[in-house]
Length: 494
Image 1 (spheres, rainbow, N blue to C red):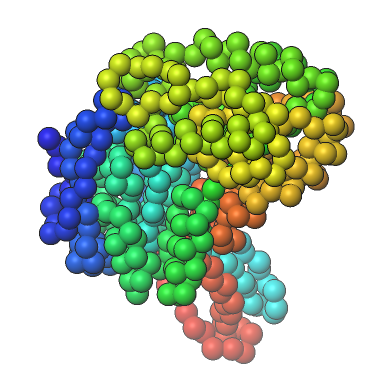
Image 2 (cartoon, rainbow, N blue to C red):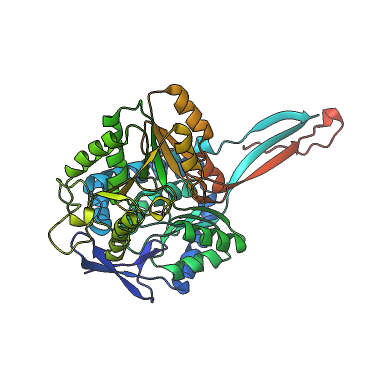
């Protein structure tokens, strides 16, 4: 069995902590073990990052960009290997894993433009012979705590931008699927990144708490559930850190009667069941504005029946297993809960059979879900799609806006006026118009509202650059003898 270690100062480090089991979700079998970091391993990673920081901070923007370009090329050449590791430990099908790597690569490509992204402003002669200009400088040692559902993409939302800005980085990936982190660490090294600039500490809450409390960690980025996001934000800020903590979601798709129902049904199935619904941008609630509910549900059900559920490494599979047995059982329990609350189970994924002892739950559909019920309100994070019937646009908008979360949403309509009204009135951070999963491109920033985000700054894009840097404004006067002042001189070698 493989053993997943930490990566500190450019080399694998076994450490002295506990070990945890790594499962293959398609078989239910243990495929390896992961080392859990103690405070000692976290201290070692921080010390390595601190030692590497001064030289990396002083490395020119052009040389930093050259390392990023080489890293990007290596990632591209190893994308299939990286996707295979993701499928084996997370369970998502290979095509979904390849899509995850591709979206992460987009952020690496964005970060390659760091010489342009860090350009400041300049104002000449703001007062007599006085100039002002702004610059942005890195923070120092920063950390990323990332979830199981995107073990490559979410880390790549963080570390390319942080490292390009001149910081050194410590990644704490999910202990459920940690292998991708070590492959990315080795590719960084091959790209020429100096040892200590990128480090990995495996582990669970013990490692998280050590990072949040460490006085030399200047900033923490987090993606995960809302309760943990709140904990990370409160704990990190209490220790004086800059924190961006992205939490959970309950994303709604509002479907108006004029929408193309075939397009809607295709979108609902792909957005609801891709990656087995284990993604914060999954559509988990369809708000059907009557009288289209029955017809839309029929079209969704017919498409669900055609989905192939199977192992991630089978090219025929369109949806894989869930990440753990415990999570599968929790998600499945919402079907009985929904029925008890008055919903109708029109597709029961518990009837899906796949050989072996994997963590299987097929795509499931609940219709006539009561607004405000637990199945409607709570983040299920699995392949359960709920359909609510509403009488009007206004009622659907109210259902979305009164919810706890504000991560992503979508409207499907051919009415441009209704779409424009929706984007202005809905209280959600990322909006799709006839687009079911409105994840922004890398040059925009990702983040929600309300209980989906703790902190002020979204991840990647220009907000990511600002999160990993801090600003200075310089006011400068250079005097010369012809004006009766003191000649302070100007270096001739600049």
